[in-house]
Length: 452
Image 1 (cartoon, rainbow, N blue to C red):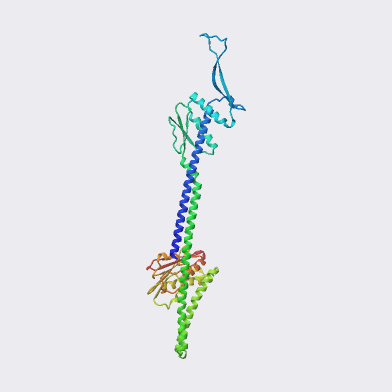
Image 2: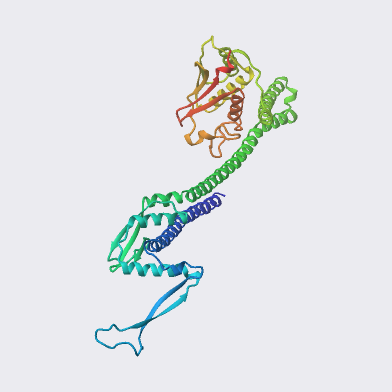
């Protein structure tokens, strides 16, 4: 079972790592794709802006503005063949020119206008105004749903564009010019634009990790409950076998060995059987009472209680216990409002555990402290203590500190679970402090709202 669980955890860990790596790759791929799309859109906007700038700087032929746009081209010159023309050195030679008019398809009108404006700019050699180009570029960016701020820089005698750069060449000057656009705080924009996908990815990673962690906790808890159930069955079997064996032995002695004819032996066996039956009845009643307390909510019956008197009344139940030193340090005037029976059951269980887990002589100290808003009851022993890793589980139902296959201490693992139920019903809290070999301290704290 343990190897199978380790294999399941290994598969879960590999799955979690795979999910995290996939999510990280998805975030990186999304960031890279957005960056490429952004650069591509900005480059397109810059090229469009340069074309619009050229159109704004030059006056295009009016024929391109007609309903049916046309463009007239000069083809060639033809000599004048007029015989009446004077062929003297002082005369001016006449000639005629040949032109061709071409209809422009409206589908390609914008490209034709851009070409004509580029030729006019190249012919005029007008200087490049970066401020005007920047305004046109910003308007073009907004048309493409980009609101980031850019700065434009002009570089002469440069044609090469680096990968990932927003730039375009202007070829209508004598010397080539490269227009480079640089975004103000570009990395911040890209990070902000990818914040939501990264947030969603992070949430998915956290949910996946949390689910796997919760699953591991559930599996561990189920295994612990299974172990506790097995231990409980073993413990109750062991505890029931002892009284049954005693009763069978005494019954056999009475039936087969003539002990029933001896009044002294008969009385001794009957007293022994009665004691065994009382103990068995007490154990059964404790289990049934704990089971009933889980099925229904316990409603305390509050009354005025002198705490010292209640503690002494419980202590008298352990007067016949050998090797017990019980120290009570409680102010005789401390009066509280609580359920006397519940408080007594709490003390009985705590004292019973302290005695059972104190090898040799049991030294137990009971004290109480009065605070402005609450009061506290402390039960401290000098027993064998509880290992630190076991402390979070001692209030669990049927849980007992592991001692292997030995059953040196009798019990079913329900005492402290029942104590916590009763403390909760009294609107209080219980904490435990212990180290192996240094004893155990239980601190029960109750709010004064339930005091007089």
